[in-house]
Each structure stands twice: as structure tokens, then as C-alpha cells.
Image 1 (tube, rainbow, N blue to C red):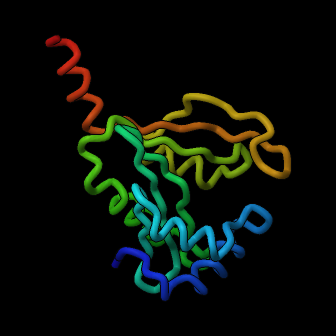
Image 2: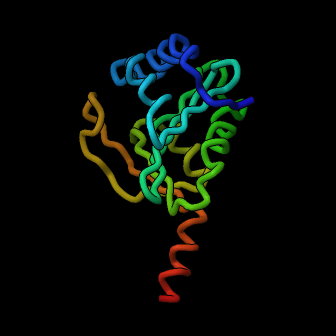
Image 3: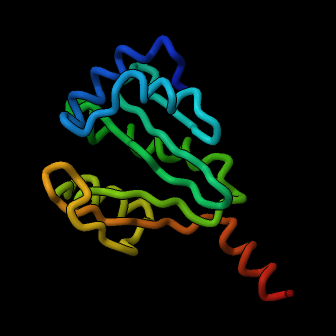
Length: 151
């Protein structure tokens, strides 16, 4: 089951963040800010084996993080997290994310979930690797196009 993150989840989330992202891990303070921040959605798997975070600004939803503990992967947790993060995005035109060119598992997941590469950010990560900027068009894009074509 997927649920909103609560402050009591902080220690477990910080540990999982460290396990998954190492030097690029968010601090416990930053995780707190993401849980409490305006325009943020922070959801977790009930057993805290995974989490996802978005930030909405205008008609754009930024997928900031999806992380799943390695021993819990390939069980649909990331898909359920993303599905939950997509709930309520009907007014948004697109969801954007950055992913390392070296993260083939994540790239495959995002392509399978209708994301496509729209840009490259050189030297984006601490190790110097590039990030691919990916986009998934959302229902609000069609409504915006329809409204524009009728003006």
C-alpha cells in the first residue's frame, strides 16, 4: 500500500536515501522540507521499502525522487509509487525528471512508463555523469492545446 510520508518516517527515509544515493543523498533536514513543503507530494510504501517525491509549480510536475530498496525491486513498488504521484495531476501538462545516463534500470522503467528524453544536462551529478531530462505528457497538455486552438 502507498501512503503519504509522515515525520515519523524520517529516520528510515534518511537511511534508505543514503543507501540508494550515497554522496547525492538528501539529508534528514531536506527530507523533512520535502515532506512539509508547499507543492510537494511525498509518498512511501507502507513498509518503507520505497518512496517518491514530486513538486508541482504551475502546470509542471517535477518528479524529484523515486527510490526502492534493492531487495524490494521488481515487485511493482516503483510503479505503484509513480501511479500514486500521478493522482491529482489532471491539470498539469507534463511531468519532468532527471536521471543519470548510467542508470539503465531507471531509464528502462521511465521509458516503459511513457517518459521520453527531451534534453541532456552535462556534468549534472557529482561523479561528472550526464543527466537525461525526461518528460511525460499529462492530461492537462491536451486541454491546454484545445483551449489555445480555440482562442
